[in-house]
Image 1 (cartoon, rainbow, N blue to C red):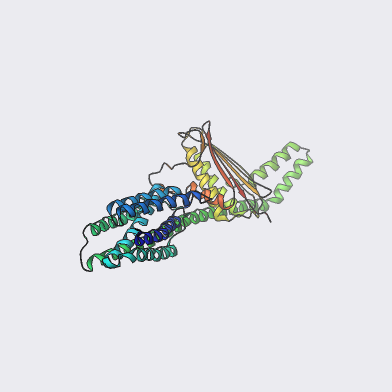
Image 2: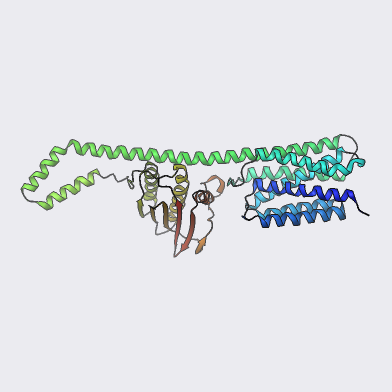
Amino acid sequence: MFNYFIFSNLIVNILRVLLIGKVMELFLPSVDTSGRGRRAALFFYYLLTAALYCFEGGGSAVYEAGNYLGIAALTFFYAGTWKKRLWVSLMAFVLDASCSLAVSLFVAESAAAVGSGVSTLLLLICVTAISRISYPADDGVDFGRRQTGILLLIPAVSIFMLCVLMLGRKEGTAAPLLCAAVLLINLSVFYLYHLLAENYRNARENDLYRQQTDAYQNQLEVIVESRNRIRALRHDMKNHMLALQILLQKKDLEGAEAYLSSMQDFMANPEEYINTGNDAVDSLLNYKLQRAKELLRTVEARVSIPGDLRLRSFDLNVVLGNLLDNAVEAAAQTEEKRLAAAIRLDRGILSIHIRNSCSGVEEGKKRRLETTKADASAHGIGLKNVRRIVEKYHGDMELTCEGGEMEADVILYIREL
């Protein structure tokens, strides 16, 4: 005999599965550009939950266990750390289970036929609210242990409370209100995630702006020193001209050439390594290279770019600052202590090549490099943010370790006009 109750629930389950997929998309970037893998995964997840519902019934322990395993499996079709995948799977499951349980506790047994539709409607409202407050999936957030522990603890405790409510259903309003409270608390967790992510991003931007401010301050000191040298040379220019005139009258060309060389050396500022006319590039590179000179034995830099480079100074600070910091830190731990950097713009293509001595790194091409610092989230912006900037300019990035040297090659496509 045809069961309209089961059939209606199977139809409503389609919307529920799509909503679970929407939660995944809000917090996890996709690794499947075509979307076929995600659609196939959602289809098999639908078949799994539909089969469990038909044979075990909704709300049973077997159904809920299979439901969570299916949600957890969906996260593998998205990019992200295992901590973030675990959090997203737990939060999606808690939302689904709390909506379903809240409705089943509120409605009577005679109205159970519409319970599935109402719970899915409640889930739709929750997902709509979350989509308006959640942070983009490609935020590059990597929380520390404390923040991650808080975000994981709340859904874990919520699942325990839901299990207690499922196993010991009681008459009255206490259980439905408690379930509704669990749902509201977990909705607030999404807002908490948004605040933590915003704070994380602001901290990273403040760190970058602080570095940029230090670089500009250093460049200002370099400019002042250069101007003081020029002013001093100009002040004694009459004496210098007289000395050169005497040398030329004596036909002492070697002496005159040596005297001109000494004048040129006097004007040269030893702290001004780069002078392209681009304030952002000059300030950043002079600041980073000055630090490199203090820590390393050999530092080489070749820069060929115009003064009006059409690249945001913030993006430049992300790429060059992070790559140079990593290179200097790695080279300082080797005996060679060697660093070489080459930056060139040719027909709209900005190429950055940084080579440094390194040790303790396996040879071959690298997708990413792990930091050796204790609190990775509190130091630097990470190569993943460099890759985000590279993708923003439709470029490419490659890391290679060979023969005790690490090479970073970055290509960015810049508008010249």
